[in-house]
Amino acid sequence: GCQEWVQGVQLLQSLRHSGVRLNNVARNAGITACERGQQWASALNLFSEVPRPDAVSFGTALGAAERAGRWLLALGLLRAATGAGIQSNLVMLSLAAGALGK
Image (cartoon, rainbow, N blue to C red):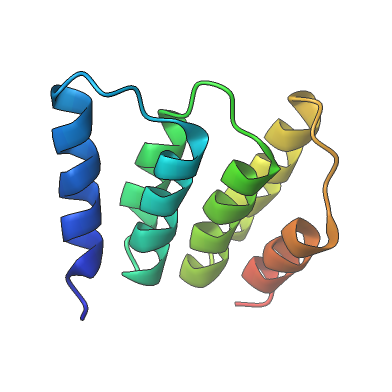
């Protein structure tokens, strides 16, 4: 349901507090859960905790920005991806364009 994203984020927090080192796959899953729950701010907060974001990390954060219609944020994420040496792919560009269209 609508609150499944909360359970996902709580699980990540529990793991982190238990001393489990979260990898990008776990963090990206949390970002996606927040994005699907229409919690773009929570998604971007999780994204900010990713030590070395990869293309999937940026893509999931862009998905949250696109869903929220936060075009300026989406453009900033694209710029940050380029600065991190990650080449924008079609999905990333489509998400940013989608944010511009909202």
